Length: 112
Length: 113
Image 1 (cartoon, rainbow over the protein chains, first blue to last red):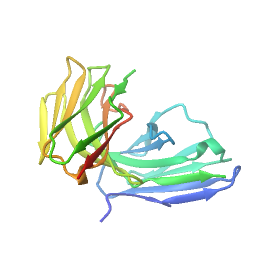
Image 2 (image 1 turned 45 degrees about the vertical axis):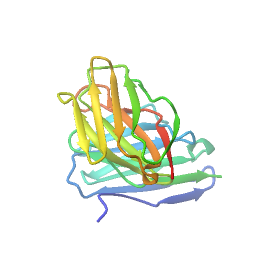
Image 3 (image 1 turned 135 degrees about the vertical axis):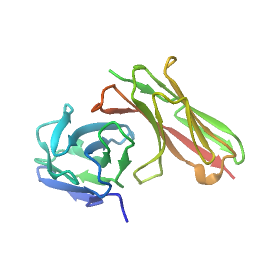
């Protein structure tokens, strides 16, 4: 019974396309996050939502748009994909931050 | 702005050795500090969470300590096993209830049989 699940696990797409990654948590947490892990394995926060409200929005191109339909779901939509967007995107959740963080398995995005 | 440093970037030890992984942070007004493990191609697994009021936390062969005044945390692994081989990351928030976590770059541990 996966606590934080994200789909798809792998995405391969062409430059200029639009793609979405979905995330769901069944832990009853209030806060959800998107993190990006680049090719050098450095992990950096992109967005955080608390009870569907955006609370952290790092310096991320506006081609990236998160959406939280309810507190158990946080999706990430990326428009006009660029080569530099290739990375692993992790969803995570916690009780009202910064509580213990639980991560999904990651979605590996490759832009060709 | 919080900065988290983990040195060295990689470590190789023989099986059975006790070892210490270091983590330093610049902003000591932290709410808590977390240690994670990441296996290749996988997500991060939370190992230990130390609240700012605590000095250490233990889980099995793992013990994490926190010294806010010096801006340091250590993860002690007793009697290391090949299955402990992974990347270990520490993360500290910038302060405040809704603050973001800043991650170190991790220490890649290899335990040789």
